[in-house]
Image (cartoon, rainbow, N blue to C red; front, top):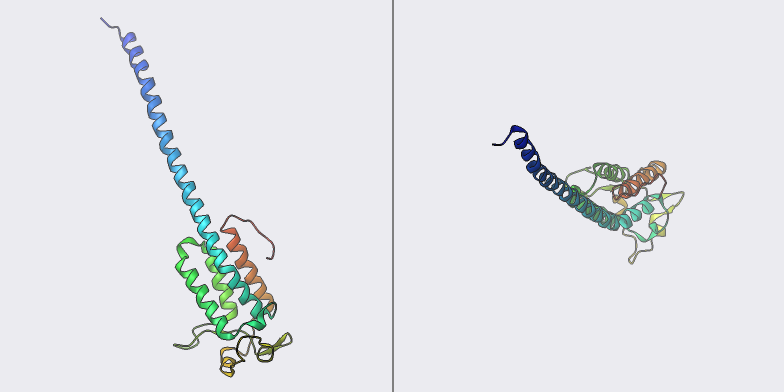
Amino acid sequence: MWSSLEIAKLTVAASIPLAVIGLGWWITLLTKRLEHSQWVNQKLVEKRIEIAEELAPMLNDLYCYFRWVGGWKDLSPTEVIDRKRRLDRTVHVNLPFMSPACTVAYDKFMSTIFATYASAGQDAKLRTTLTSIWGNRRADYRGATAWNSDWDGMLTDRAADRDELRARYTELMNELARQTGVETGKEP
């Protein structure tokens, strides 16, 4: 006849392998979840890098145009609007992959340089003037064709504030970097 002590010993001896199996199964499940999460995060970072690589050159073109630096003389107002449309499309198509802080910074930057929704069916107006102390858009334009006088109407009579423009551009570029895991705090 079995004593209760022998039954308890046998129960404990049998439950140890079952507990080890259960613990092993639980650890395996957690490991797989962690690996999947790391894989998803890696893919998200790769996607964000692709988005940043597509956006950065066009953003820099707009920044230069509105700051009157770099290649601003090479762009016509229609090319600036075209870049805005391509940027808007890329950002809006990729909203699920972008951080909220990055999309807010993008909207702030674009609001600084474009006057949108002025009237139905009209393109955004460029928050810049035809002339400034930095140049004359009509006289200095170096595009493939001559300056079109219709472009004058695409500009506003008030330019974006240069300091605000720099701050918004810096904020946006830093957010693009930050969402890919790069910590910044400096101007690009």
